[in-house]
Image (cartoon, rainbow, N blue to C red):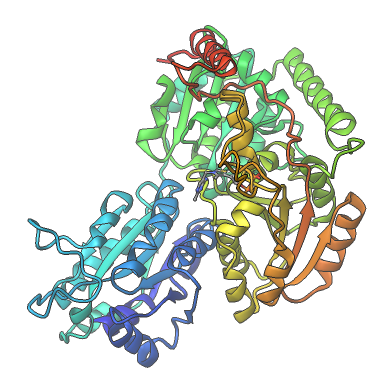
Length: 618
Ligand SMILES: Cc1ncc(C[n+]2csc(CCOP(=O)(O)OP(=O)(O)O)c2C)c(N)n1
């Protein structure tokens, strides 16, 4: 059975717009008794066109597959194989990250014996009343398709369905095929047809013309229109169509984290990041917009300011999304279609209906952008006397060092929010943000996937010290595979973005900084821990730099570019200097009952926000 699986995966292709490529060009895996004699044997004997890669941790390999899928615009992914029990459940977080971000990954956890009588086998969960439950059932709620191959012939139905889900833009996410240890080695006379090349066409769903007409009627009434672009705009390669639509009708575009760079930064209609972590000018324009066209976005709380960001009393929404569930959000006029196709149709129909830009609004947009840029230059990208280098200033230095075709990756901590707000994508500087799950530990493994997908350009990982410490070990895989990545680590001595939130909602610093235990107080309030992150990275083979000034950071970036293997730049960063406000609210509840004065004030402020800012959109 495992041999058939390996053979099958080597002949699967995806195709869209006449570009055809291998759907699953490789497999990551960690072996154990659950798969070494089955899948391991099959790969060794039959895996000539399915290169095997060795990660350091099963969670990481799923993130690598997600990074690879995202960089391939979901047209290709990697398979991830694990042994029974802990190897399998290590993949659960990776599966959730993929499914929430709607990224295809193929997971092959091993499972307990289908034949049962030898058990309980090593690492088996014995469920008291459900004998067929295994730890792999954890994957069910976080997979878009799940099957357990308890007879070898079940592959014949399971695998085509798995490929269909992986290549369906609406349904895609983690696909889990659990492989009982004994069945991996069982024989079955599979038909030859099963091993013939198969191409999975990724369709572009066309919009309903009646919906387009309805959208044009709404657009005709718009004086202050705005577009919110989401990840779907990137995956459908709608960038040119988005820019044409925005520029033709004078509609500024705010981007979600997943859509960073969806519209070229050079466009006069590009606002940059929008929402809680977005730029101030976008927040201001969102607040006043009368028509909001949402393109390929899930409209999470960071985008809508927990349903507070759109304050025009008569605001109306148009939802363009390939996923029906998302089209109706915020009471939008639903257009269920591929983003590129819907934008093209809308551009044509709106032009035919005589929709034109509002000149006064265009001036307002330009002025808001200019004011924001001046603010960044004068107040944000600067040093503060007596303070260490701050992360905002560092981002500007990194932004100026990168070149067209380079990619920067972030997912958790301060980095994704600060990049969303401050990273300038002009000049084709790609920004890969995972914020659906904002999973600490995604970044380094995902960067390997990006590197595997893109041969040219530098791949940067921008993370905090907390995130580095959570999952640094794929640096070993980077060395093993000669996949060059460059880590830029903000060493600010703790989970500072969470401390910031904590100070805002309780006023007490507790449990977020990397401090030694103060014996008297019995709390983590002693000195900062001296952790040599560069030495840690060097131990895995990376070339390293410690920098403390913008000038040294610039030199390290330039030197790292010249290196052929992985680099790690550790920046000493001011712990408590944060970026400018977007003026978009976020719903984070402070304690309702407390003896603490600051927390009481935070609660009052929170309740005021809920009452005055949050609303329902129908
Ligand atoms: C796996 C995981 N655990 C916990 C969190 C919650 N969390 C979000 S940001 C953060 C702190 C990240 O610290 P660091 O990487 O040092 O970045 P900084 O906050 O200092 O910018 C934590 C704990 C998370 N997002 N992911």
